[in-house]
Image (cartoon, rainbow, N blue to C red):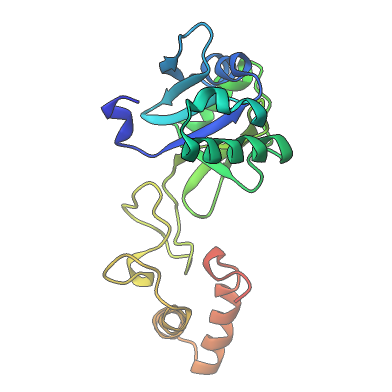
Length: 224
């Protein structure tokens, strides 16, 4: 990989059909092939890049043929034989989800579906500050294409988020000096005394009951 690509996290995916996978990432998802080996026409390995994010694709090799590529390196032989065996015997990427950021998920969704890409859902805004679409590549690897979004309300207490940054989930009252979500007990007490008692003029007992019901509907405290 180039020095530029090494500055960001990269993932490597083993593929059953390199040409099909390269075509999917390049022609369907809009990736650029930055590097390849041995060549771009018949790659065994390719570095596909989208917005500075690197997805490296590699042709699957039968375990019994790994030795032909390791040139007597016993350590490499053991590592790559294990990888090849795992790919042969298991569902590729089971339990793994790869998130890739795009500037505008709604526009991107229109582009890729226009190219024939099938997605698992339409763009959806999540409570944790992103809008995303789920899809799978030709080998079944699960990809989530997303864009950070500005939330209208705090996902902890429900108060309006003014001047929020994309991806911001919580208001200043619900976070500490490091921006981390405060414990439920602190948020609960602030909701009781600050909102229901202070602003709604409720007595303590009524305020606690109202705060309990209110916070139970907040994504941050689901099931609390």
